[in-house]
Image (cartoon, rainbow, N blue to C red; front, side, top):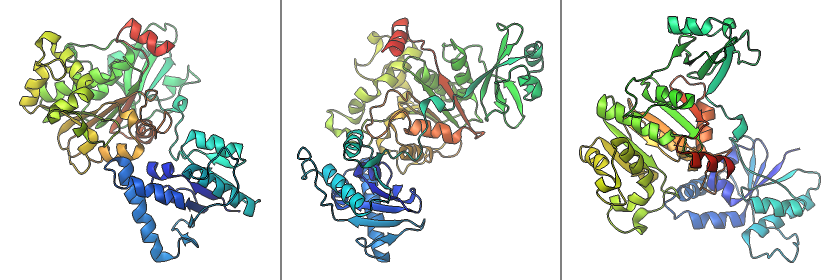
Length: 450
């Protein structure tokens, strides 16, 4: 028997194509959802764009039949717009609220078809609780859900037989095969492209080597280790060393860095970008961006010029650049904004710092693009950003999936973890999960204890 899915407004704002992703079942859109979608469609935010997209889809469906009687979708589903429900609710749930009208509709359908599975899809946790209390099956809509503890880490530690570590140092390469994992039964039998590996001597665990798996060569190869560091900073742990290799590798066009606060994600990304643009000239410009949250909101509410409006949002970027230049607060042009080093690079056109608000429609060629705080982006927004990349552009995304400000995503379905899961097998992508904080002892304790 087909299921009947009742969709809440927030599901369609999160993914306007959700109606095509629920299989050959019946899709029910309450009329109050259409009313709420209408209120969002004028916004210039991502919610507004999704609202307009869904409205156009529904309008086109009217050509194929009456929405009140049901319209067949290409995947075999039947979509119906229901006017409302008349099932009584407890007195505590006022019927003038859209959420409660949807619950009444769900109860009505359940009463009319008691043997049929009725599922209410909503991203509102409290609404799911109310539905459950009324005996209605309620679920979250997470088409690309990736559990944080199951997310690809980008690294592996393998115990190898004595002599293999020395052989790796001598030959600068070692094939990944039976000799690698025969002494470690828990070692993966295969690695993802550009996965980073720590080889430990089985007899002497302190004797180690770090490398990257090259899918083309089928071998583990040494890391790129610039002797002068990145603008004066050097890796303090294995994950930072892995990140340096990925950030400096021109064959890797997409790098994702995931980790808690203070692990050095943004600092190393900016330092590598400066090396590749200012020092080596591999890219024409370093473009650093982060969501002006909520993504898409007009920054005109803040006073001053565009640059002054951006300062509160982009200050963490300026702080990292000032650190790399060795600038102190006394050398800054103002207390809130770019220091002299960053300002000079911007004047030369080597550095550009801007919000993600206006990235839609752009093509970004030959640039080193860093997107900070990418955990606040939805999968659709991540796709929008990645598809902006032109020829010879490298994109670096950094973020912490446990520090999310966007109410429409969480640690399991945000755009950053979605991207990591989708690109883990691609040869042009690399991922590193940072584990140890290096900002300060206090910062590390706060990340772990709080």
